[in-house]
Amino acid sequence: MESKDYITINGLKISCIIGIFDWERTRKQDVLLDLRFPCDNRKAARKDRIEDTVDYKKIAKTTIAFVEKSRFQLVETMSERLAEMLLERFALSEIFLSVSKPGAIRGSQNVGVQIHRINQSFSFKNWMALGLGSNMDPQRNLTMALKELDTHFGIRGCSHVYETTPVGYSRQSAFWNLAVIVQDPGENQTRIRRQIGSIEKKAGRTRSSNPNGPRTLDVDLLLMANQIDIRGKKKIPHPDIEKKAFVLFPLLELIPEIVHPLNQLNLVEMAALFSDKKQKIRRLPEGTLAPFYPMTFNR
Image 1 (cartoon, one colour):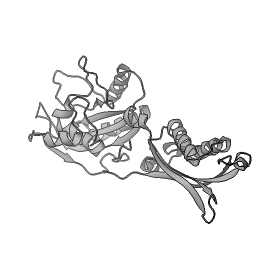
Image 2 (cartoon, one colour):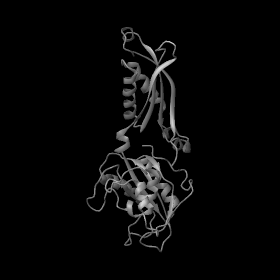
Image 3 (tube, rainbow, N blue to C red):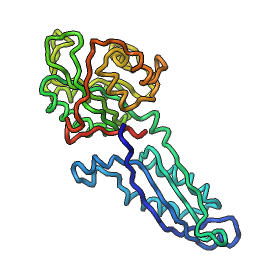
Image 4 (cartoon, rainbow, N blue to C red):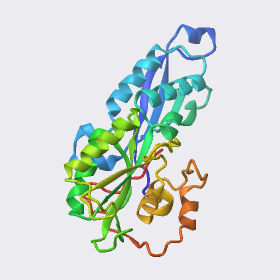
């Protein structure tokens, strides 16, 4: 698993009304803030574009405006309310926040609190897992698919690429497979699947009488957080998660602790129970689909 990247804003000095004493309710005091939040720095570094990074200047300005107008009595309350606001407004998955009052106690430089808060709605409701596969010009088609998925949904995590043996029809080339986590746009499944289908068509995907035959591109909707929809042919969770190595093991790399909403096993437990030795799978080098690289899903 990859380590997380963070952006930090340190030593933000802001004047505001803060404190419990009468004089503190009429005279502004300085508070010092440090912020740290996840950001996939590799995405911005690949293209050297400001559009691909978190707008930390806007976060800093929003923080200053919020604190300057606040009139909290406790730094504990200020910290909680500020963290809640930043998590929601900027769709951050988590935030580390330190708020201190210089000289609040005689003989000390600072007195304050440090908190770590996770965006629960982001963590458990707003993501989707997709499985990608190709054995016809896979480097071109999978790279194109990743670009399109990033544009349509925003990629939050990306596994390594795996070379896998064909399943169901062996007289064809090996496949390249990977898994990605993208932001759930909050639209109905029909629209989401239509967008995914348009990406497959862009790669020249055509349906033949052999559903297991060669293909330019497969993009399968595997999971939508903990949602369950088993009506009709298109099911969530996707039934291949348990049965196919090319689905399970790339997904395992990204969300090992996630519990399958139907069988109540996490991905590690499911991988341990996987017993079909005929399905061969081999991880390819990290730069196989450059400029896209493995990227941890920071929930």
